[in-house]
Amino acid sequence: MAFASRTTAATRSLARSFATLHQAPRSGKSPTAVVMMNMGGPSTVAETHDFLLNLFSDGDLLRLPLQRFAAPILARRRTPQIEQQYQEIGGGSPILRYTQLQGAGMTALLDELHPETAPHKAYVAFRYANPLTGETARQMKADGVKRAIAFTQYPQYSCSTTGSSLNELFRRSKVGEFGDDVEWSVIDRWGTHPGFIESVAQNIEAALAKFSPDTRNDVVLLFSAHSLPMSVVNRGDPYVLEVSASVAAVMDRLGHSNPYRLVWQSQVGPSAWMGMQTGEALKGLARLGKKQVVLVPIAFTSDHIETLYELDLEYAKEAREHGIEVHRAESLNESPVFIRALADITAQHLRDYSSGKVGPTSVQLGLRCPGCTNATCGQQKEWFARGGR
Ligand SMILES: C=CC1=C(C)c2cc3[nH]c(cc4nc(cc5[nH]c(cc1n2)c(C)c5CCC(=O)O)C(CCC(=O)O)=C4C)c(C)c3C=C
Ligand code: FES
Ligand SMILES: [Fe+2]
Image (tube, rainbow, N blue to C red; front, side, top):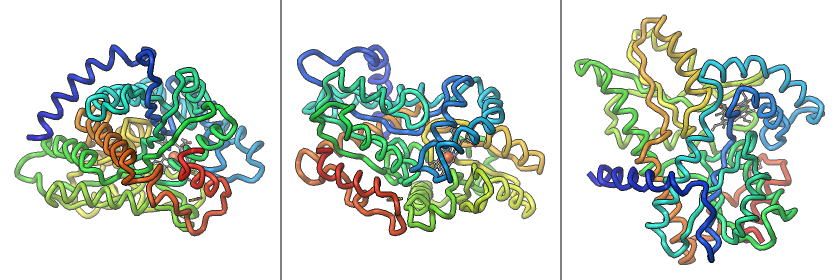
């Protein structure tokens, strides 16, 4: 009930916010910036190569011998296959469109939820696709931003995702790209926030409703997250734990109505990655006679090739060939419940920060992975802990 009325309010705010998305901030007061950090994706097929080049060049994501030379070779080699995948999902990644929509809806709500820091303005900072962090910095500097929140759009923390975005933000801030005197705070993870959990649970319920009521409770919920190399897991990265916590919270919200598993997808290259693999799990379920499955993306909030290509075109098709009835829970995309959650998370952060209840970063962000050898991680954490000063 509470969520139904929130949903209507969010939708109204969303409609209003479309009109203001690209306008300059209201005159007189510089905006409170909410910087939505994510990896991004190529908006057009033609941008695929540059996206992959940026990704393979990122030493915070993966370390390659002679990376400056190896990255262009790997990017060129992988481009045709990934271009083909983006072609098949409609000619590009929808992540920019969804992030802008989510940001506009969130800031419209935030102006009402936390008027003390209004106007709020959402900025998108992608790690591997436009708008890249440098471009975002130029825009924020031009807008005269003095207060900014680095808000990860990955619900669960990994040093390979949110950590990489924070390192990039730190590096560019240190050389003055954002201006001289910006006060920063960080929202670094929110994988068990009740609004996020609610939005995922609602999309699972919608997928479950497609099955016959007689057998609905036997349907297996197969949560699927992007895998991590075991070298990253084994240096103490918190992602596997945090994705597991999201799954546990969703299952609590659903009252454990169905059996479930958490499995891992999108392994790249020959090294060992976290398993079990999603594709293998589907085959195994078919072998065991479990012929009804809902696939649930749990570690990414909008559609991308992993949902639209890997889950929908590859795995779901293969599962159907094994006689499995499979439906996918929708990604959060335009979910008003999710957009309201983004606004609630930010408003709570602003309240706690201004009352002194929390500092610029979470306590958890302060701890490096026990196996970390990346000096930037340490410098970045200290810098954000001082509010970016
Ligand atoms: C939470 C999500 C993700 C984690 C964790 C993650 C770690 C990770 N990824 C690679 C290597 C690649 N990832 C690639 C694409 C890609 N990765 C994610 C998300 C996470 N990655 C997404 C959503 C995407 C696809 C973007 C889209 O539009 O769908 C790629 C490029 C594609 C390919 O070549 O297959 C690579 C390479 C590593 C090494 C890593 C952890 C260290
Ligand atoms: S790799 Fe996790 S803190 Fe550096
Ligand atoms: Fe990845």
